[in-house]
Image 1 (spheres, rainbow, N blue to C red):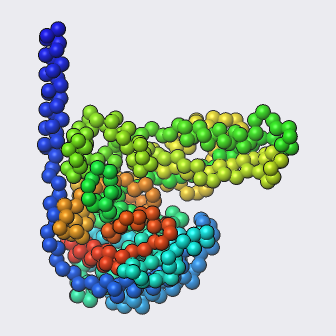
Image 2: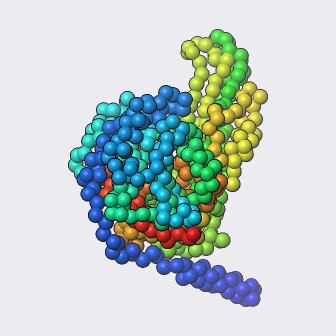
Image 3: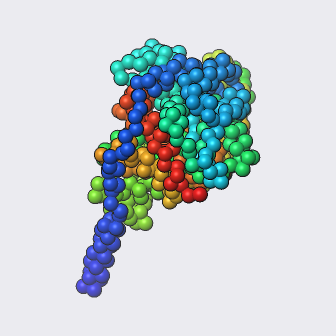
Amino acid sequence: MKKILFVLVFGVVALGAVLVTNVVRLPAPPAAAGEAEAITIDAEQAASRLARSVRLATISYASGAPIDTVAFRAFHALVATEFPRLHATLQRELVGGLSLLYTWRGSDSSQAPVVLMGHMDVVPVPAANLAEWTHPPFGGVIADGYVWGRGTLDDKTTVLATLEAVERLIESGYVPPRTVYLMFGHDEENGGRFGARAIVDTLVARGVRPALVVDEGGFLASGVIPGVEGRAAIVGIAEKGYVSFRLTASANGGHSSMPPSRTAVGALSRAVMALEANPFPASIDGPTRGMLEAMAPSASFGQRVALANLWLTASVVERAMLGSPLGAALLRTTTAPTMLEAGVKDNVLPPVAEAIVNFRIRPGETHESVLARVREIVNDSLISVDYMDSVRVNPSPVSSVDSPAYALVASTIRSLVPAEQLPVLPYLVMGGTDAKYWGAHTDKAFRFLPVPLGDGDQARIHGVNERIRVEDYGVAVGFFTRLLRGIDQLPD
């Protein structure tokens, strides 16, 4: 008995020693970036140009709806007028009818180019929400230190801040050491199928293989990741796939006074409930595991113990993450019933009932494997499961965090707040970006919106009172300026 007890005690002590040793071996939290080189930016003048772009209602309505080409062409004209040096220096092309591709020739055409991305289109504003806006969503009002309006966060800020940076650099006499492509899509909010995809196909056909791609996706804010005190920046290194399925239940119609034992509405309801009751498997791997490991040095001691020893604690960490929608979305393919349709009158049994269920697909799964699992769960002879439409996107490949490209992005982000020990964390983007179309052609595509978000700003994206602080817009311009100045650090 004493021997058994000794072995148990020794095992516990040894395990504790291993756990603590792994914590000690963690790298130190990131050092403050130090004083960054001063970049002169007239944030108020830049903000006025952003405001003018917001007044152009470049809206992407539901897929297939008509596009207001007048608004987009007015946006093109604004770029030409407000950024004359850029317009005169860079080669401009229209792709897909309304998307813009600018080519800034570098001094060494043999070096792999850089691609900076953004999108001109914005989501519509529901009429029911108009009264909640402090300023009109397409008024482009500058008030109380903010630019107000749709697109100030998603994603005209990226487009205009990139243009501002290039305009200022040209003015200073800067010539990039390698070619830079600026690509601004017109239909990202509808999947980017006719804008960004066409631009990527065009560039790939010309032999372009980027050394770095930067698009929207991550952000800088407090409370981004539970357990990390203060501000942190998350950089998307991959994004989930996207697919929606139409569940169609068919049964005998007729008078509601004599319902059959199984109705279309009942069958559909059970199917939707079955999908919610049987979520996809969760797993700590891929980009999410990388994010957890990267945040460990900046976490509290207890969390450092857990995150430095995922070989032992993965199941515990997984259960904790599944307790929140954000954590669950990082771990699994999500299931979201979004639309229901059935019936024409309260006393008529509908012969058909339909539901649309949306899935955001984690790396390691595909829209085909999701379809197979959904059909297996539903498993009802009254119900067919089919793709909703042609939008079906598999998860993007995962970009390398060990590359000089990622190091350049991370160091540029830290320069935004030089006095802080800012954690820069790789993560899995749960929405969609146009960067996905580069996935097959480079492992150096990163997603980051260089705007310090304040309390409640995340909810403003696609929401009410979207806005950006004038000062923070200046930060975004500074990010792209520093990033472009640093592209000589990338390998040939």
